[in-house]
Image (tube, rainbow, N blue to C red):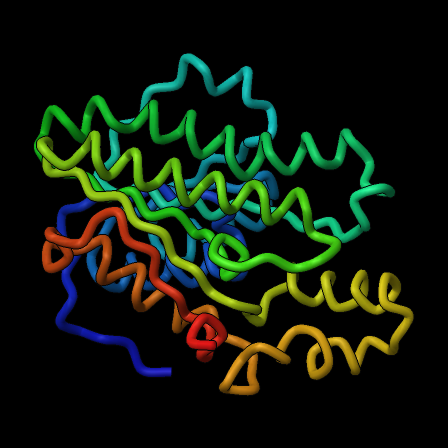
Length: 253
């Protein structure tokens, strides 16, 4: 897939969580091509180190669900992409409480703490880009995903509050809302959904994942990364508090 060459992030520094694979890795590569110096953050130390070496960036191997360790963190970056996430599928009455709490620590509490750590330096320099990789499930709901949906809806609101507070300092905050992206996380969801619904894995994409989408296909991670790169650039200075659906028309209905 060809990438835009007229978006420049030259001289900018970026931190991307969940950066070792999927959307995060696509964003890391896109940012690097646009000229940014990227720190790739992931708990998979080997994978994140390899990607950092590939793009000439740095890496941070960390478990972001250990939120206590993030409370006194300070970050000095121009761009923060909160992407790390996980999915667990189960009916509410069977959802393991510790799993529910884990998802919220990783996908809502840690983004709050990272934003909190990054804003002072962004405010001081008068520039900042907070980009939260939300989901179509930040705008819509689905059965059996109570923890994920609740965390993404919370992330949407956190992003909007950040936009309001950061506006006078040149800091924008926006959400990306892709539907099902062709990643390892979605491949695992297909298997989990097959078990939950009692159908074959090959039926999950057609009968569950794409039923609401006008375009019957999975999103490519590079498609998400291209829009994230634009949001990170100077060209998106008036874009804040927004949610961008990359969903094949899901939210049009």
